[in-house]
Amino acid sequence: MLLAALTSLGVGAAPAQAAYPDAPVSYVVPYPPGGTNDNVARILGKRLAEKTGQPFIIEYKAGAGGTIGAAHVAHAKPDGHTLLNTSIGNLAIAPQLLKASFDPFEDIAPVHYVGNALATVAVNPALPFRTLPELIAYARANPGKLTYGSSGTGTPGHLAGEFLKREAGIDIRHIPYKGSAPAVADAVAGHVDMAFDPLSTPQVQSGKLRALAFFGGDRAPNLPGVPHIRQAGLPNWEDALGGSFFVSVSSKAPADVQARLSALLADILREPETIAALESVQVSARPLPADDTRRIIRNVHDLAAQILDGKTKD
Image 1 (spheres, rainbow, N blue to C red):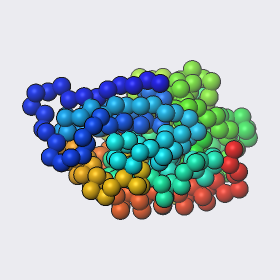
Image 2 (tube, one colour):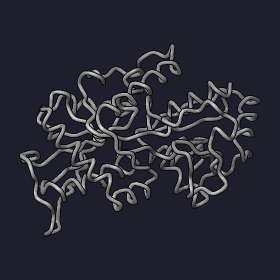
Image 3 (cartoon, one colour):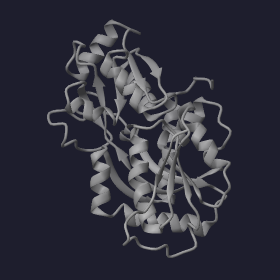
């Protein structure tokens, strides 16, 4: 298990204004190191440590579409000192496909929305197509031949691939990984044909992958000439499939602790430095309170139920 302690090193760090947190905080990343979830946790954990004077210790608990990490937080001591850096798939998607030891709506409480990830339909540049319609035409002519990698079963990248299959009427095969980094690395190496992931953007910029479309936001200034997926021929595309991030705790954590954490995150997510840091890892800050976050989770859950209808839990 890899631990990375994010502590406040600056002498001018603001002291905590309330009892919470009064001890080191375990900040669970439910995927391996190196992915977008990890990057977001490092950015937020550093600022939380600086603002509170307590270390926020990143703890990696990967596997099963993020449900292993989510279950750990759901069953942790409910004092708010164990956080989940939640991706939308951990609660809205994966529990519908995998046997999870928690109820995503009863055992986990989202405290604040962080933002949306900008993702791409990125393919290995050795493949013959340069536009999304060309990919779709190839897939229709070669059913089951193309593969796509995702950060795991029940993740936004998995749902994006299934949504593409449904909307375009094609058959492409899903290859699940235990995180974004290995999925994108295998797309670069040609072991899978494509990936739907925010982590693919730097590989597109370096020429190691080719972006056919982007989604997760209205614009992609760092991807000039790449169309939004709705402009590329899929007008019904749901941008939430780009992935979104929020911070959660056990639902049994005291209400005042949840409110304190929400207030801390709201302040941090308004800081220009934090906004810029998130943009550098392909995430657009979108601070929203708990009620709005719960509505987004429910909407994506219901969309996933429609797309994944008929698939059984492993």
